[in-house]
Length: 66
Ligand SMILES: [Zn+2]
Image (tube, rainbow, N blue to C red):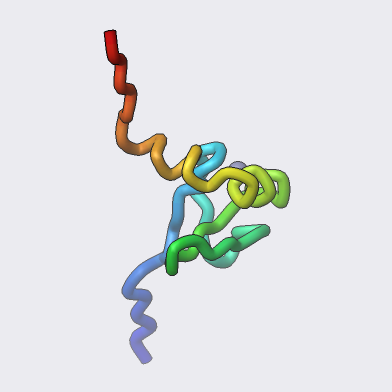
């Protein structure tokens, strides 16, 4: 029997940047149809409070108008 794991399912905790897997994740949150996994409940809470803050982190959106 070949055990095939197509994807380990590791996700980056958007709050602290830690890598968590679906199995090791403590908390999970849904946002905009996507699932996010967190290493701790506090990370989920922080994300739920202001998801955009952590998602927009990927793209530098610093608009500096003179
Ligand atoms: Zn975390």
